[in-house]
Image (cartoon, rainbow, N blue to C red):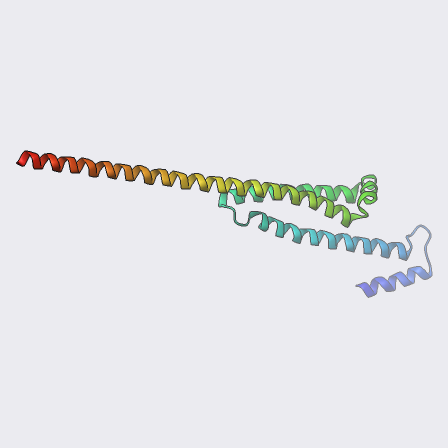
Length: 168
Protein backbone atom coordinates (compact mmCIF):
# COMPACT_ATOMS: atom_id res chain seq x y z
CA UNK A 1 0.00 0.00 0.00
CA UNK A 2 2.83 2.38 0.87
CA UNK A 3 4.67 1.43 -2.31
CA UNK A 4 1.53 2.08 -4.35
CA UNK A 5 1.12 5.47 -2.68
CA UNK A 6 4.75 6.33 -3.39
CA UNK A 7 4.40 5.25 -7.03
CA UNK A 8 1.27 7.31 -7.42
CA UNK A 9 3.03 10.22 -5.72
CA UNK A 10 5.96 10.00 -8.13
CA UNK A 11 3.60 9.97 -11.13
CA UNK A 12 1.61 12.92 -9.90
CA UNK A 13 4.79 14.80 -9.03
CA UNK A 14 6.10 14.48 -12.58
CA UNK A 15 2.95 16.01 -14.05
CA UNK A 16 1.09 18.07 -11.47
CA UNK A 17 -2.51 18.88 -12.30
CA UNK A 18 -3.83 22.35 -11.62
CA UNK A 19 -5.95 22.49 -8.47
CA UNK A 20 -4.59 19.23 -7.01
CA UNK A 21 -2.43 19.09 -3.89
CA UNK A 22 1.23 18.35 -4.33
CA UNK A 23 2.79 15.08 -3.22
CA UNK A 24 4.83 16.54 -0.34
CA UNK A 25 1.68 18.16 1.03
CA UNK A 26 -0.27 14.91 0.79
CA UNK A 27 2.55 12.87 2.33
CA UNK A 28 2.88 15.40 5.15
CA UNK A 29 -0.87 15.21 5.73
CA UNK A 30 -0.67 11.40 5.68
CA UNK A 31 2.23 11.45 8.13
CA UNK A 32 0.36 13.89 10.35
CA UNK A 33 -2.72 11.66 10.32
CA UNK A 34 -0.59 8.59 11.09
CA UNK A 35 0.99 10.41 14.04
CA UNK A 36 -2.46 11.50 15.25
CA UNK A 37 -3.77 7.93 15.06
CA UNK A 38 -0.70 6.63 16.87
CA UNK A 39 -1.24 9.26 19.58
CA UNK A 40 -4.89 8.19 19.93
CA UNK A 41 -3.85 4.55 20.27
CA UNK A 42 -1.22 5.39 22.91
CA UNK A 43 -3.76 7.46 24.85
CA UNK A 44 -6.25 4.56 24.76
CA UNK A 45 -3.62 2.24 26.25
CA UNK A 46 -2.78 4.85 28.89
CA UNK A 47 -6.45 5.21 29.84
CA UNK A 48 -6.80 1.43 30.19
CA UNK A 49 -3.89 1.48 32.62
CA UNK A 50 -5.27 4.51 34.47
CA UNK A 51 -8.69 2.84 34.90
CA UNK A 52 -7.20 -0.28 36.48
CA UNK A 53 -4.64 1.49 38.66
CA UNK A 54 -7.24 3.98 39.93
CA UNK A 55 -9.46 1.12 41.16
CA UNK A 56 -6.69 -1.09 42.54
CA UNK A 57 -7.11 -2.00 46.19
CA UNK A 58 -10.53 -0.36 46.59
CA UNK A 59 -13.61 -2.23 47.72
CA UNK A 60 -16.31 -3.04 45.16
CA UNK A 61 -18.40 0.07 45.77
CA UNK A 62 -15.47 2.49 45.80
CA UNK A 63 -14.00 0.76 42.76
CA UNK A 64 -17.25 1.20 40.81
CA UNK A 65 -17.38 4.89 41.72
CA UNK A 66 -13.73 5.36 40.77
CA UNK A 67 -14.29 3.56 37.46
CA UNK A 68 -17.22 5.85 36.64
CA UNK A 69 -15.12 8.89 37.56
CA UNK A 70 -12.19 7.85 35.39
CA UNK A 71 -14.58 7.13 32.51
CA UNK A 72 -15.99 10.68 32.82
CA UNK A 73 -12.43 12.03 32.78
CA UNK A 74 -11.59 9.94 29.72
CA UNK A 75 -14.66 11.35 27.99
CA UNK A 76 -13.55 14.88 28.95
CA UNK A 77 -10.07 14.13 27.58
CA UNK A 78 -11.55 12.86 24.31
CA UNK A 79 -13.71 16.00 24.01
CA UNK A 80 -10.65 18.21 24.52
CA UNK A 81 -8.65 16.28 21.93
CA UNK A 82 -11.54 16.41 19.43
CA UNK A 83 -11.72 20.15 19.91
CA UNK A 84 -7.97 20.34 19.30
CA UNK A 85 -8.34 18.29 16.10
CA UNK A 86 -11.41 20.11 14.77
CA UNK A 87 -11.05 23.76 15.86
CA UNK A 88 -8.15 25.42 14.03
CA UNK A 89 -8.07 28.58 16.16
CA UNK A 90 -8.18 26.56 19.40
CA UNK A 91 -5.45 24.27 18.05
CA UNK A 92 -3.27 27.25 17.14
CA UNK A 93 -3.47 28.62 20.69
CA UNK A 94 -2.74 25.21 22.25
CA UNK A 95 0.16 24.54 19.87
CA UNK A 96 1.63 27.87 21.00
CA UNK A 97 1.38 26.77 24.63
CA UNK A 98 2.24 23.08 24.35
CA UNK A 99 4.14 22.70 21.08
CA UNK A 100 1.68 20.40 19.34
CA UNK A 101 -0.91 17.68 19.79
CA UNK A 102 1.32 15.45 21.93
CA UNK A 103 2.18 18.30 24.29
CA UNK A 104 -1.46 19.30 24.61
CA UNK A 105 -2.47 15.67 25.16
CA UNK A 106 0.15 15.30 27.93
CA UNK A 107 -1.15 18.46 29.59
CA UNK A 108 -4.78 17.30 29.55
CA UNK A 109 -3.79 13.84 30.80
CA UNK A 110 -1.74 15.45 33.56
CA UNK A 111 -4.83 17.34 34.74
CA UNK A 112 -6.87 14.11 34.64
CA UNK A 113 -4.17 12.20 36.56
CA UNK A 114 -4.20 14.89 39.24
CA UNK A 115 -7.96 14.61 39.60
CA UNK A 116 -7.77 10.79 39.73
CA UNK A 117 -4.99 10.95 42.32
CA UNK A 118 -7.06 13.28 44.51
CA UNK A 119 -10.18 11.13 44.19
CA UNK A 120 -8.19 7.99 44.92
CA UNK A 121 -6.69 9.56 48.05
CA UNK A 122 -10.18 10.47 49.25
CA UNK A 123 -11.43 6.95 48.52
CA UNK A 124 -8.51 5.38 50.40
CA UNK A 125 -9.02 7.76 53.34
CA UNK A 126 -12.74 6.89 53.41
CA UNK A 127 -11.90 3.17 53.29
CA UNK A 128 -9.43 3.56 56.19
CA UNK A 129 -12.01 5.51 58.20
CA UNK A 130 -14.70 2.89 57.50
CA UNK A 131 -12.32 0.10 58.53
CA UNK A 132 -11.41 1.94 61.74
CA UNK A 133 -15.10 2.46 62.52
CA UNK A 134 -15.82 -1.22 61.82
CA UNK A 135 -12.99 -2.28 64.15
CA UNK A 136 -14.17 0.13 66.86
CA UNK A 137 -17.72 -1.25 66.56
CA UNK A 138 -16.39 -4.82 66.83
CA UNK A 139 -14.35 -3.89 69.93
CA UNK A 140 -17.37 -2.17 71.49
CA UNK A 141 -19.52 -5.25 70.80
CA UNK A 142 -16.83 -7.53 72.27
CA UNK A 143 -16.66 -5.32 75.38
CA UNK A 144 -20.48 -5.36 75.69
CA UNK A 145 -20.56 -9.16 75.39
CA UNK A 146 -17.75 -9.50 77.94
CA UNK A 147 -19.65 -7.22 80.35
CA UNK A 148 -22.84 -9.28 79.86
CA UNK A 149 -20.90 -12.48 80.49
CA UNK A 150 -19.30 -11.03 83.62
CA UNK A 151 -22.72 -9.88 84.86
CA UNK A 152 -24.17 -13.35 84.17
CA UNK A 153 -21.27 -14.95 86.07
CA UNK A 154 -21.77 -12.51 88.99
CA UNK A 155 -25.50 -13.25 89.15
CA UNK A 156 -24.84 -17.01 88.97
CA UNK A 157 -22.34 -16.69 91.82
CA UNK A 158 -24.85 -14.71 93.91
CA UNK A 159 -27.57 -17.29 93.24
CA UNK A 160 -25.19 -20.09 94.19
CA UNK A 161 -24.23 -18.25 97.39
CA UNK A 162 -27.90 -17.62 98.20
CA UNK A 163 -28.72 -21.28 97.57
CA UNK A 164 -25.86 -22.37 99.87
CA UNK A 165 -27.09 -20.03 102.62
CA UNK A 166 -30.64 -21.29 102.23
CA UNK A 167 -29.45 -24.89 102.40
CA UNK A 168 -27.59 -24.30 105.68
